[in-house]
Length: 365
Image (cartoon, rainbow, N blue to C red):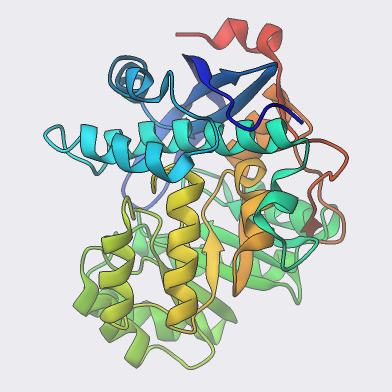
């Protein structure tokens, strides 16, 4: 264990653009690459690491605006640093890019603190559970029916997932046929759909009934996540066996509070790469607990693993195709599923991850 008042000596930022393995699309967007912003924070003999999936602008903001705030501070004072970073971006706009930059720094501070104490992060936070259920996630609208079926089947048969998720909404006229293909491919596994807010209220209500007839049990962002009245309408009117889920675009605690006060979701989602890091994620977990609702982690499974073990009412973690691929390529120690579960490696301190800098060089931007 390091000294009791370790001082943060340095903060460095890198960015990497990793092409997808095929063109991808959901209900509202298309993309062919993902940008990873990596933050490393050092104190004593330890280096903490955090990351976000965001644009290069988040890297610039972290390096130019946030690094001077954190450097020279006590590595254990994470809440103090979190508040200082939030205050520093007030005139830039807290939500969006700034929140993503804060996320990477905050997570690096948590990783650093656990390493300074010589414990895995799950032990530092205090776990409620030893492992987390995952659900396979991808099923992009750009996929052929064969690729859709193959991907979902692999998650069920190879990784043991009891639930899988596919994208809908970019071409609603095709969605029922695509959902039928998925249903036939995965057998008795649960089927989730995600419209990414592409539908209007009437469309979403109609599809909720049609999807439910094919055994869909989770409808994510059937309408825009900013349309809290529309989400509440969906929650009230959707079939009883179908959960309405949203929250991935929450950047600060007030967003989650408004969503919960509106009674807009059955499952609250939070993303530590966006919601100001693990500090923000754990605050979202406390809010969900206060409303007696389950929490689901959105994407970035290697980053959410330890915090998910500590979060109350935790439901599952998204085993998202793009991020799983990147994390397995570029991080030693990234989790490997067994029987539909992932668990932290308690023999490694912090997040248990080591960045493969040599392997990442070709993606640097």
